[in-house]
Amino acid sequence: MNRIRRSMLFIPGNNPGMVQNGDVFDSDGIIFDLEDSVALEEKDAARELVKNALETFPFNAEIIVRINPIDSPFFVDDIVALKKLPISMILLSKASIEGVKILEKHLEGTNINIMVLIESAMGVEKVFDILNTSERCLGLMLGGEDLCVDLNCKRTKSGQELLYARMRVINAAKALQKFCIDTPFTDVNDEEGLQKDTEFAKSLGFDGKAAINPRQIITINNVFSPSEQDIKHALRVLEARDLALKEGKGVFALDGKMVDLPIIKRAEYIIEVAKKLKLVSDNDET
Image (cartoon, rainbow, N blue to C red):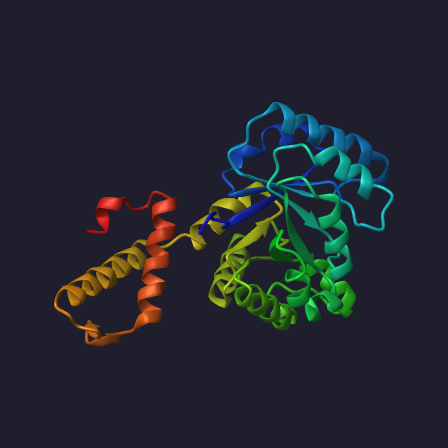
């Protein structure tokens, strides 16, 4: 595990205050947006603002930039401006196999990786192949709003219309050992709805969730962090595993239930995440 990606906050590239202070919101990732949130007449100014901010300010979060689509007149200018900047990934909108190939070619000679935004019916159906197009492609984000437009369905708070797409992108990402980020919850005033939607996303297997407002970060981070109960149980599993190994046992039980390899791996993952989040120390796993 290289990074924790519980939360990724979209920041409009034409908002100087948010761009400059993007690091204060405690999100694991910051997505500076040059696409949907920026009007056509502000594209050049937004690109320059993001470029200057990344050249000037140190950011502790993972830095991602959503560029304009490959068929837009702003695509090449976006790439040229970003290639030498300290960013982790470029978020490719309307992702396709051909789009990833084109972006990959433009990124030759850089350390910048790719995250694909799956936001069309065709993108959902082709998600495995899109993710598998390039080694630079580290993971995906589901774009629920545009997908619902493509599907000609209404976006609801329950999110049932996205269930198939969510399951398909998760399965593709996990099969390829890449990360997957859930679509934003768009009602920034519905805290209860955000909590439920985030818990549901976690239960399906998403690694994190996108946010469109800084107020959503605390809830998202809390849901995608191991709970105290999770950590305690994981530590007990690993302690029982170590004791079984010392006693030469290949199989052991905990609380009357047999513990097999998937449960051990889950416990190891929970503790690894907890350590990265400084919820436990190395001394706790002894």
